[in-house]
Image 1 (spheres, helix red, strand yellow):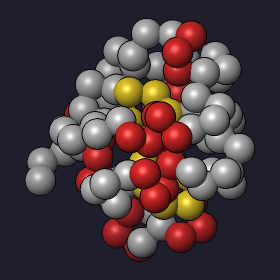
Image 2 (spheres, helix red, strand yellow):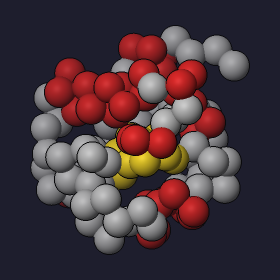
Image 3 (tube, helix red, strand yellow):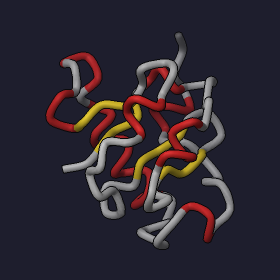
Image 4 (tube, helix red, strand yellow):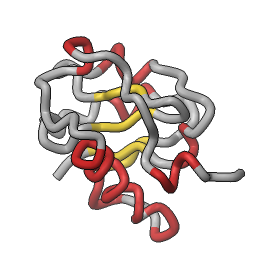
Length: 105
């Protein structure tokens, strides 16, 4: 299991979560941040650091946000990023997941 960034992060990207993450598994995209589920160690430090309440443990996702578990996972597969072992090792993600890219609030 891993933590998941949801729609409250879209177009906000406060980045407080990045500062708290001990394994550097939170990657910025053009519109929102994404947690790489392969790299997340389930420590939970990112959740209280998020000022817009966008991060949830995968098991605690509200029903209307459940799709964000697969969005966070899929973005690393579809962009060919995989698990580089930390966001600081690679440039920001070049694109958002298609659902996030077309998201309207």
